[in-house]
Image (tube, rainbow, N blue to C red):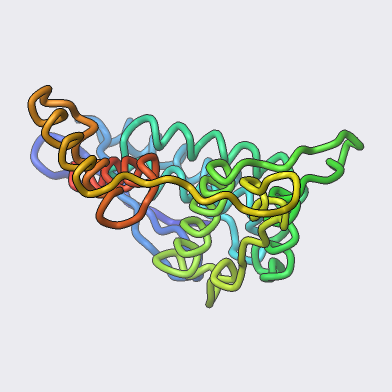
Length: 244
């Protein structure tokens, strides 16, 4: 049974009691009460009862992947500096992962093989637990799932210390063979893709500068790095989100 006490600071009474964190250490939890000692003591008794009943912090051996994802969302994702759109996308991905059986697996039992099998399932499609057919996800969606799982398992290692290593670091994307043949002709030959000459690029650059077109920067990055324009734009957006 947790024990607590009240003390007065200024006109207000404060209540405090000790709870166990994920590692089993005692951590003091304090909250402000009212100007009445008896009312604050009543609030303290209720807080202790809630703690004992709900066990604010689950024991690490009982935490599932789904519970970890919820912790990650509340303690790292939401307080972070990502845009609202990115946060919503990650939350939607979290809900999708929790619907899969891997979401109910105990965190301490999850291996790289389990995660690899899940990523392969997302990459190639297969049969859902309810018997329906799941289609393969696009690369964009796969990046979302990978980012969420990487972030959550890294969070589980530190600062939460729920596990000692991140199994997601051993997971790879296994691309379909067909993906490398998307631009082949009927005979299997890959046609050469025409590119802009430097003179053409300069004319395009001058035109965009005159129009003050926002596409100028991603096109400049794409031309000099070999990235696709969409990828260049994505990197710019990610960088802007990081510095906001």
